Structure formats: C-alpha cells, structure tokens
Image (cartoon, rainbow, N blue to C red; front, side):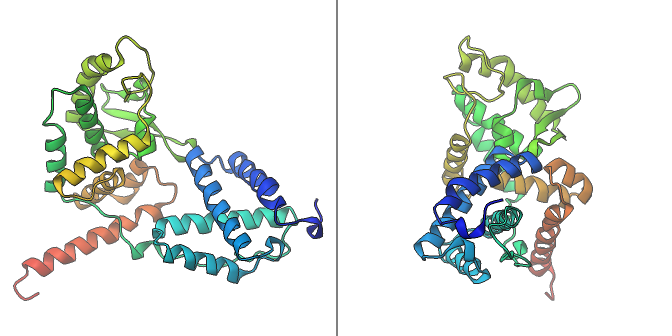
Amino acid sequence: MTDIKSINEEQIPERFLHDFLSYISAEKGLAKNTLESYSRDLRKFLAFLHDNEKNFAALARTDIVDFIDLLRHEGYALSSICRIISAIRGFCKFLIIEKVLREDPSENLQGPKRWERLPKSLTVSEILSVLNESGSNRKSLVAVRDHIMFELLYSSGLRVSELVTLKLDDINGEAGFIRVLGKGSRERIVPVTTVTVQKLRDYMDHQRQQILRNRRSPYLFVTRRGKPLTRQRLWQTIRALGNKLGLKLSPHTMRHSFATHLLEGGADLRSLQKMLGHVDISTTQIYTKVTAKRLKQVYTKHHPRA
C-alpha cells in the first residue's frame, strides 16, 4: 500500500482515478456510459479541489458540501447531483481501501431528494400529437426511421442508449417483445405494441435496406453511412420535433411518459420496474408521486368544491 504522506495532489487524478474506474468496472459491472459520467464527475471535483488549493489527502466533509453547493449554483439537475455524490462516495471508499484516506469524509452524506423534482411527462394527447407529426412525412427515409424510433421509445420506455444499440436479432416480432441490454450489461425483455411491431417490420423490410444501400449492419437504426445512430443525433432530432410542436421533448420525456401512462392505466409497480430496467424498486416508486400529483390536479380542476 502507498503511504498517505507520499501522495501529492497530482498523483491522485493520474493514478487513483484510473484505478478506481477500473475497480468499479470489474467489481460492479457498470455500463460504459456510467463509467464515462463518473470519470467526468470526479475530474470536475478534483479540479474544484485544485482550484481551491485543497489537498485531497486532507479532504473534509465541508469540501464536498461546498462542491455540491457549486453544482446547485451552476444549475445542475438534482439527478446529476445525486450521481456525482454517488461517484464521490465510491471514490472515497476506494481511497480508504488504498490507505490514501484515513477517514471517509462522505460517510452519511445526504444527497438532495430526487423527489423534489418529478420526472416530466406528456399527456396522452401530446404524445399522440408527437407521433402523428413525426409520422406525417413518409417521403423521407430518415423521417420514417425517426418516426419508428419515437414509436418504439413510447411503446417500450427504452433509455436512449438502449434504443440506439438495438440490433436486428433483438427484435422478436412474432412474440411481440424486444431484448434489451441495459445498464450494467443487464438483459431484460420488454413487450411492444402490435402497431409498433408492424411498423418495425415494414421499416426493416424497406426503409432500412434503402438507407444502407447494400451495406450490412447488425444495428436496427442506421445512418446513410451504415453506422448505428448516435445518442447525440437522436437527442437533436427529437428536440427539433418538440420545438416544432411547442413542447419540451427529449428521449427521457418519452420514457417518463411511458411509465406514467402505464401506472395511471393500472400497471403494477413490479411489472413497471422490470420493463424500465430499474434494479431498485425505489427508483420506480417516483412515478407513484407523479400520478398522485396528477390526480390532485384533476380533482382540483373538476370538483365543484375544490
């Protein structure tokens, strides 16, 4: 083990950050996107400490609290702050193991409550307007592809990273489900609607082949270069559609709408948890508060004595 006194500020980013990311990748099986987020989060934290002339070997709880306050001031989403706190906690525990830190400054550190900001979802009529608008252009091959992606997002509640990495072999049209490789390389089965399955079949038989132009690709959603569509491109496309309709639209919005509408329709929480790919049901339970809030709005609007 390395003696704590021999550690300087420059060694921690260069050595221990790399070792920590390798450790959690092997031990926890985290997805590549999560590892990249943790790397960015921790590098921002280390830069904050460096700018404030803080020695990491003497890291204190107040340093972490000051950093969180900075994130709030910069307008970070609560979900992002929760992820960053999780990364810092994990890093501190790792440095305890490596004997870089003697005490854990992140122990019992309370993160912001994620329920303070509820997931934003659209109404059923707004979702229908999105799908109708995206499906109105049948002349463009790319427009048809994008419409199928939007249909699948709402039909299955996939994460954007899950959608763009779908392969042809993941689609089981006969059984009416898709196989999804989610966070932490965990596989799950998600049902899709009959309408979506039919549209997927038409797309695979016609538009996809025309987009590829005799190229081959295992991926479901492809570009004219034969490459899988990127997350960034999907975000840009769906945001542009939302702007056209005057809606704040994103892949997350479609996923949240999928979950909220299922729960409002009577779906049980455990089934929803499996479809969304949540490891912990407490993550899924946030939608019960969304539904309760909507019920209160309906009651207030329509009850004569409300």
